[in-house]
Length: 271
Image (cartoon, helix red, strand yellow):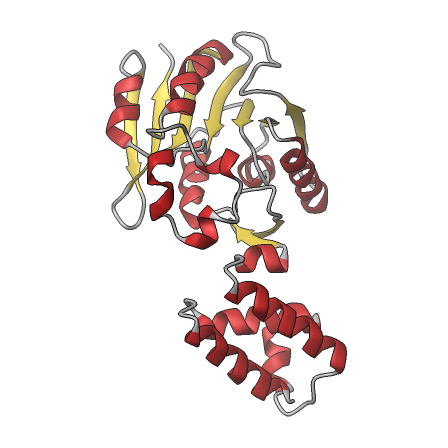
């Protein structure tokens, strides 16, 4: 079995199971199995796969066909140009969440930033590396917090992590900016999710109660407590209209759309 044949057969297997981006997925899984990059795969297309590579590649293909996300198989996901470790304990960072980071970067004057529900640490670590602010991050899942800490160490980011519910560990008026990508999928819509999301990503990071608004209902008043007067709250959005209404007492409320025109981020200032 040559490298080229392995790629072709892997692609065919994935296409037969209606896996999207079959060729790219086959390449990523073979890179993981061999420990080589894409350029090596194509430069060594006629090389024979050694047995251990073939065993790993076959297992990874089986996992993907059974619905496991590629990112959990490889243990890696890129976010804002950096590679983050991901496990089934954390939500896989999405490109859309980079809009939250961009919104925060527009407020470069913030000196103390709190990321609530940090998950893999993608937002907190990125902001720590992109700004001079003091970054703190909370997470209710201790297992997720361990992943975030590993990412911070691997990328050289200075972030202080705390295991707690929302911002319970911190005093009133402690921050210039509170940022979050909270769980916002309505539990009643669970059946409509893609199986690889519904069955593999952590429910704690996906579902925000029956209507998807439960965490926002707690997070917005908690942010008002944590922020200094004039401080900013920034959150990734599910139901934009409902969340905007919850922020009626705030000033400077704005909705930022993603590249597809979908409302993605809300920014609001504490009066």
